[in-house]
Image 1 (cartoon, one colour):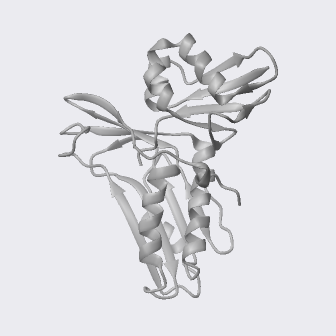
Image 2 (image 1 turned 30 degrees about the vertical axis):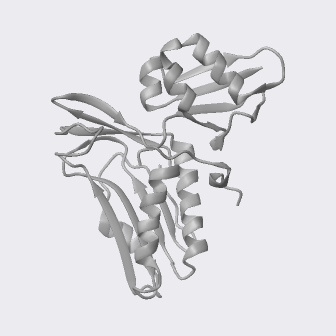
Length: 243
């Protein structure tokens, strides 16, 4: 049985490559079996792989899940906190490597019924007084597991609609690549007929949920060194998109 393995962020650095093909003996294996094989093959990743999150074919996976021939398995740390297409109602999902045009995003999720748009925009900080972070950052490097990231962005939008039924347009954009201090990193925007129809709450929920389940990571780089910033949220079966 042959499977494809993807590594991201800290684990990718430790392995020294982003992708590999793994041959498994027999026809009955689980995700835990794959972890054990990789730990034996790459001892340096033992501590990281034991606590790493995993996905099978772009959906969160768990140690007891079965592996079949041809599966794509990704291992990555908890997320740190293409182009989309217009749907009806409008939804946009982006992983751009260039600046995000806020005005274009707002226009894209505005309909004839829109009376309010709430937009959250994250920025690259130059100075951080927080444990685990470099005090002074020169730039950030963002990496994403792209197919799964887009799928999870869509899941976030679905969850928003289940909670705030009057929200109309939803836009979720996460920059990838190198970003300098002061540049925009992430954008969440929600439109609704009135300001009290949930657009504020939905945008706040969107950024919080993105940092939990959308597989994107950042590396802080500065004069004092560099470090991948990993989260502490561990997905459960409830975080799978069963819709």
